[in-house]
Figure 1: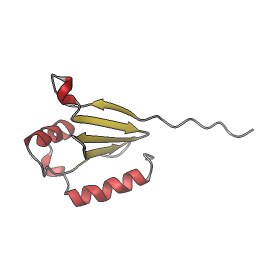
Figure 2 (figure 1 turned 180 degrees about the horizontal axis):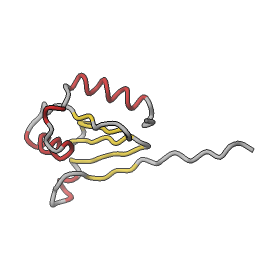
Figure 3 (figure 1 turned 180 degrees about the vertical axis):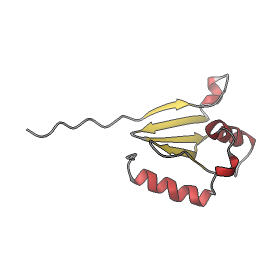
Length: 101
């Protein structure tokens, strides 16, 4: 008999932020799989977090609503946000690990 292997964690989703109506909350979603959380503003990934590492948040290149989403994610720490190109590079690296730390 083979070794017991823990089944993979199924993906889950939740909302973040302070929307009073669930109609708007669908625009601020967090998807989690394994140790990787990905935050979306509308249909665009804008931040991610891997267990044991700091959260990575990209600069706001869109508008006021996405800015509100980013502030909910990082508490308004605009100085730590990275460019879109750097975000894509780090995000690609993180997802290539399959959510493993």
